[in-house]
Image 1 (cartoon, rainbow, N blue to C red):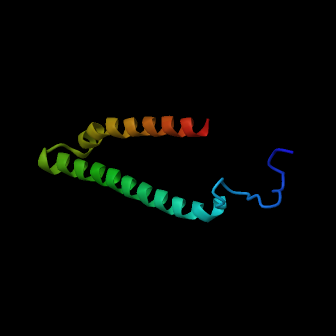
Image 2: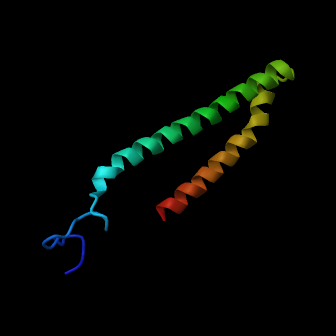
Image 3: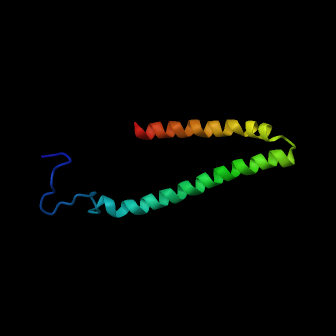
Length: 90
């Protein structure tokens, strides 16, 4: 009998072929993935913030002009994120 509701036979494990239960390793993977995501998001957000300050103070642009010059980067990231999300869901 195959399927998700099958109970393991004598000596058989429920996890991977190595005998490690899936839940044993998933918490560490989740933590490291979350940490990497926080670092990347912080870096990207910080870059947008510093770029807007540079454009306003260093280049003399107004707040609207600085925001509009950074807007294409934000749109590109949003489009790329949506493409990655839809590929992982499918």
